[in-house]
Length: 116
Image 1: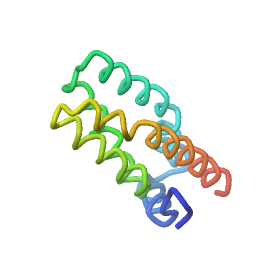
Image 2 (image 1 turned 135 degrees about the vertical axis):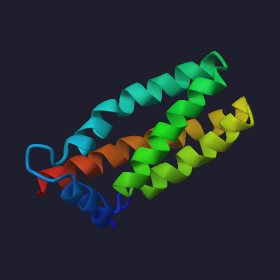
Image 3 (image 1 turned 45 degrees about the vertical axis):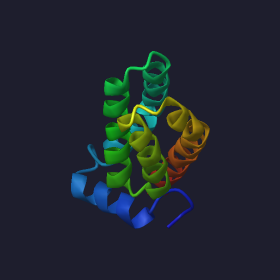
């Protein structure tokens, strides 16, 4: 395991995807959608749309789990718990770390793809 991604879990997902054409598409989509998801979460919290924030957190958590991005999933889980309690201060207390770990996760995933 690297610092942010369990390499074996990510490689397992890639090998389960199948042929070279589709291999890595999920990873690329995760990386390309990270900023959009992050901004959508901030917007939802900014207008106290806890329903949309819940959807975004679920998306981050489920895709992180599939990729073996355990630190990101854990932090997203903390934000998600606060979202479900409609605890805006609790959400905000984890956002900087969520963004930081999300960026590092994307960097490690790019390195993983480059090594294949």
